[in-house]
Amino acid sequence: MTDYTIGMDLGGTNLRAAAIDRSGRMMDKISGATNFTEGREAVLSDVVDAINWLREKHGAQRLAGIGLGIPALIRMKEAILSGSNNLPYLENVPIRDEISRRLDTFVILENDANAAALGEKWMGAGRDVDDLVLLTLGTGVGGGIIVGGRVLRGSVGMAGEFGHMTVVPNGNPCGCGNQGCLEKHASATAVTAMARLMQLGEELSSREVYEIARRSDESGEKARRIWRVFGEILGMALATLINAFNFPLYLLSGGLLPAWEFFEPHMTRVATERSFTLRATKKETRIAQATLGNEAGLYGAAYLPWIER
Ligand SMILES: [Zn+2]
Image (cartoon, rainbow, N blue to C red):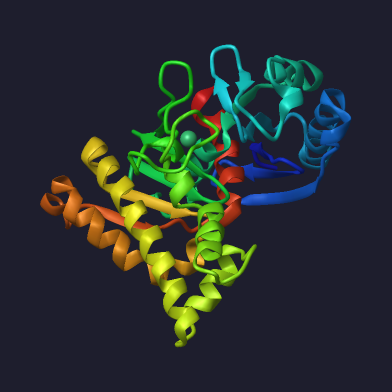
């Protein structure tokens, strides 16, 4: 028997949890739906039940702690959530202390994109570096910063919100109060909106826009223009990040990666044009795809108790 931790990824409608040992070997993984519509108590019991199931199977004495990745801003000191559209029931509730009390073990909360960045550092594309940035490209854009092998959280835990960097001065309005945010111009939602504007279809998924881009007809040409704009916007954001951090590695993950072949050349071109740091450090700076997919968050959450306890 070996010491292990449990990493959990709590999403809008489901949860996933994994028991992972100190060397990064995934021993077990479970997933299930959560009763989000039934309120706070239902969600808390789903979380506790899933952890208990893994803990009974792998031994309570060997469990070194629990990391919980959550799609929300987390005020780290109080472990209070805010700004989560998916988990309104958990806002302003001492969820960490409550779970910790029910399970009588060490629990740490982390923003889901931060957890994914840490997972990539531990077991994924970032294992050879100590400093990296991860951008998660989905319906929105999340971000995580790893410095010296640890999550950079900022003074209250809200660092790394790259999805809300301004990339278009008078761009599309965003729920955050700003306009022209990165996630309003380079996300799955933005790709769907551009496809509508280009009259390719009303509600196309980014996967479908990728498939169309592979065609040699006029629609293919239109779809490739969408990925070009997407890549240029992303390149602009990356140029700013590269100038700010001078890290060796910038990772992209999420459901838009399949279109890499179409947006990457434009992304790299614009990032190079706009970032003198990138031009000066071309050999030492990489923009690459993350490798753990949606398991990154589980690895990162499971890694937290080892480095934060
Ligand atoms: Zn915004």
